[in-house]
Length: 332
Ligand code: PEP
Ligand code: MN
Image 1 (cartoon, rainbow, N blue to C red):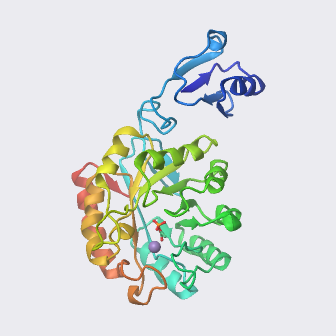
Image 2: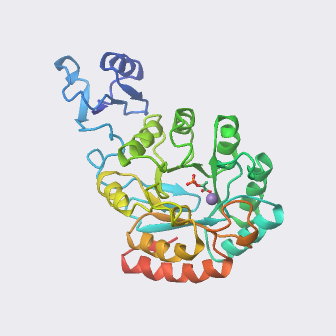
Image 3: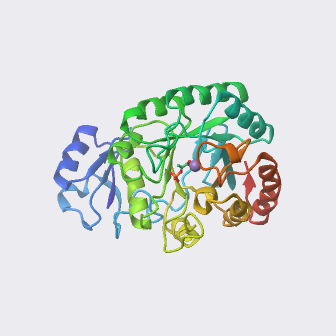
């Protein structure tokens, strides 16, 4: 249950009530909020005079629930805002990894020239094998900061573990939490205290309930700027890299108040399927898509099979604008 306390309740009083109710306490100036386990459906009479309003919930999808807030939350990424009544579909594009200054400069030149606001590229790659390229680390973050400076793009880059989380938070505009890091409570809780938006990817073996509960760790830390990202789940199918769970996306749209970004590149795993899936994603009226594109995909140091060439991306981008318009959205 989410409890909004009256605005004359002090932070200290709220903290005492939180102990009494075994609740998580979110300190907001002028509006202290307590979140109790969803099992608790009723409040003791003794605290009712301190309560402004309360929202009983049927599961621990709470702060992210449509039963708490009817409208999708607004999240601002650099110059653009998604969610709320914006009807904006944000295109986040870029290579899987930062590889060299020349490569990321070519990407940033091309994408910013196309009007793309958000450049993605990983510097700490969560690879399946320790023998694969692990990312450039801090050097990569510095190159991304250079791209932001030079081209005015916002940066989306991922945090893999606790060793570099402070560096990622310092350099990036949007903190991406990858599918393999989604259960890391250290990362989730630290992102709850960060003052930057978080793009939370769904783990590939994660139920929708668990996925949204992971977002609750960030929201209950006080960071309201969380975006959910569907990037494919593992099923019995092996012909594609993962299975793109668009049914799950409908569930998230219906039941959560968080903006949703779809990632057809990691779901499909092969570039040939990405344009169709990207169009299908935009047709769902979601808040954004994340697409991997590389100056020379064949030579990419990670995820070579799924990255679009720049001409392929350009062709796709033109069609996305039409699909977005057909569902009352605008590509930004
Ligand atoms: C990525 O975005 O490059 C990535 C590694 O994604 P995921 O965590 O979804 O596998
Ligand atoms: Mn990738």
